[in-house]
Length: 412
Length: 163
Image (cartoon, rainbow over all chains, first blue to last red; front, side, top):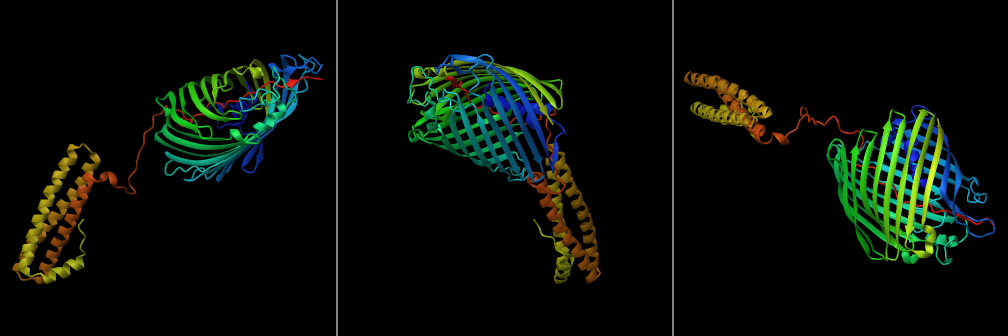
C-alpha cells in the first residue's frame, strides 16, 4: 500500500470517528480539553518490509538492482476536534520519520527522510440553509498522484478548498458551488539517473528535471443533489480545472467534467452508485465518456462489501491527460467492537493522450486491526503493487512490490 | 367567498326594506339556504365515496353548521311574518336581520365545504402535521454520498548509488 493510502486508512480508523465503519474505534472521551473541543495526541510506530524499497548500489557509484529493505516509520501527531454550535473544526497533523534500516542492504540507508501531513476542515452554519466549508490538505510524502513519474520522489502537495452548500428546507435538495487551488512540487530523493538506457532529457528518468512537472491547478465546481427517498438521491455535477506547469507550458490542461447519476439504496441492504458523464480537455481536444458504477452490499452499519468500475480523465504532465479504467472490490468488516478487517483490490488501465503510452497497475491491500484498549491499537497487513508500462526507456516504471507491515499506535 | 355582514350593517339594511319585501326576501333566503344544504349534502356523499375520512369530517362539520343556521332562519322567518302581521317594525327588522346574516354565513360555509373536497391538499394551518414513515432497517450512514474510490497514487522506488 502506498503511503498516502495507508495514511488515509489510518486516519479513517483512528482519527475520524465520524467516518462510518470506523465509529467503533473512536477514541472516546479521552483527550485534552481545548474549550469546547478536545486534542488527541498520538504516536505510532510501523515496521515495513518493502520488496521494492529502492535501487541500492553496491557502493561503487553504479545503480544496482531493485532490492528489498526494512523501513521503520515513527509517526507522532495530533488530532483536534472542535464541534462548537456555530462551527465544526477538525485538524489532523503528523510528522513521519521514514528510516531505511539497511538490514537487507547496508547501502540502503540514504533514502531515509522526513514526511508530514496535515488536514484541516471547517464547517460554518452546518444546520442552516446556507453553509460555508473551508479546508486545506497538506502533505510531504514519498509518493505522487502523477503516474508518469518513475523515480522515487518527495512530493509537496497542498490543496485549499472552499464550498458553499445550500440546502433549504429539510435538506433533501442541496446545491453546492465550490472551488479549490492545488499546488504540487517534486524534489528527487536522489539525483541519480536510473533509466536503462540513460535518457537525460526525460524527467521520468532524470530527477533533476522533475521540477518541470511542478504544477498549480485551479478548479471551480458545482454539484446539486435531490434526495427523493430517505436514502436515495439523484445528482448532477460539473467542474472545470485549469492546470499550469512550472516549466512545461505546452501541456497546460483545461479539463472539464460534467455528469449525472443516482446514489443510494435500492433495498435496505444494497446501495448503488450509477453515474455517467463526459470529460473534455480543451487544450489537446481530447474527450471521453466517464462513468462510475458500484454495487455495495451493506452487511451492517459498520461492515460492507462493494465492487465497482470507474472511468475518468485526469490531467498529467508530459501528456496533458490520461484516461483511467479501474475495476475494484473492497471488504470492510468490524467484528466484536474491536477487530477491523479490510481488503481492497484494484486494477487500473491507464491510456495517455497521444496513444504512445499505456500503463497497467494492480493493487491489493489487506489486513486486520485490533483495539486492545482505548489507547492501544495494533495493525498488520500486506500490500501488493504491480506496475507496468509499454514505454521502454522508462523501464524502471515496471516493478512488482510486496510489502508486509506491523503497526502499533498509542493515543490519548 | 361570501363576505360576512356585521349585525349593525344588516340592521341598517333591514330598516330600509319595506315590511312586505322583508317577507319576500326572507323566503328567498330560506330557499337559497335549502339549495345550499342540498348541494353540501351531495358533497358529503362525494367525500364518503372517496373513503377519505378527513374530507368527510370536514364536509360534515360544515353541513352541521348549515343545518343549525337553516333551523334558526326558519324560526326567524315565522317570527318575521308574525311581526309584520302585527306591525311590529322593530321585531320584524330583528328577525329579518337574523335571516340575512344566516344566509351570508351559509354561503360562506358552502365555499368552505367546496374547499374540503377540492382544495384540501393546498391548505395548511397550524393544526396540519405531516408524518413520514421511514423503514426501520435503513442504514444510519449517508449512503447517498458514498466514499469515493481512493485516488490513484504511485510510489516509485528511489535510487541510491552509495558512492
